[in-house]
Length: 99
Image (tube, rainbow, N blue to C red; front, side, top):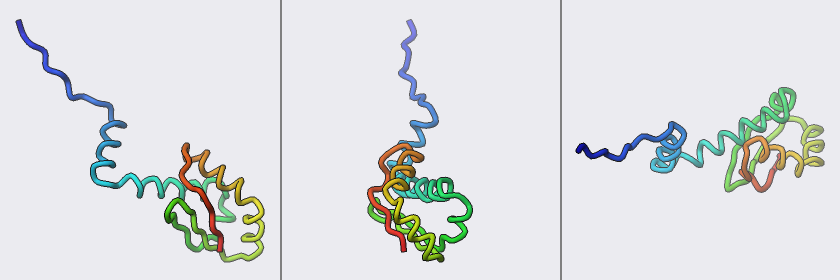
């Protein structure tokens, strides 16, 4: 009788996940998702006034042109953090610094 070999097939999502872990690229892709979530959630008017943004140690750091927009966003800081985490689908950031 013929013996059946175990298949090494896996779905594309699992293969990509293993590849990201092996080459230590997962953190970069997660940070990119957070930065894209900032643009998607806050819309084009805030995105135009955003000069710099980066994720550093689970903290989203954003620099804005307008002091008025900065103060308005600081008032709803916790809501922005929860919206970004909901948009990404996990607890990706713990804090938000707006300059």
